[in-house]
Amino acid sequence: MLRQFGLRADAVANGAEAISTLESIPYDLVLIDMRMPVMDGIEAARQIRNPRSAVLNHDIPIIALTANAMQSDRDSCLAAGMNDFVPKPILKAVLRAALNRWLPTGDAAIPTATRQVVPSITGKEETLIFDRAGVLRRLEGTMDWRRSSFRHFLRTCQARLRP
Image (tube, rainbow, N blue to C red; front, side):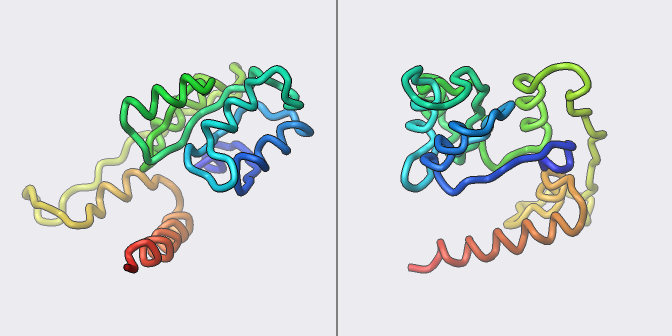
């Protein structure tokens, strides 16, 4: 999604690596998951905000990306010093809005895409186990990106469903 917005991003494996990277590279914004190995997003945010840490910019905007979508999770993120909260599954419009709130203003604003409505195959309401139209609306990217996303989902989902 970030590439589709015309943005560039670096990825790290955990919160400790995020802190280490922020000590040497000046970024415009941090997207951080609440649940990461080694150091979770809450602790990483606290360290980023700590004036005694070696992070270059203690005021860098931090946006939480998390499957924990309860109000208490949002409150925990904000209490740790995060600026915003984007729940998973990540909707492109929600992420775009959060990025536009916190990235530098001007030409960097991410344009809003036109919304596409995918009609129902049968034309009537159904209870769906897999909402294909809904998924396609959320994954507004190219077909290659959609395929890649589905492959990743299937690999990780199978591992999580095993007893």
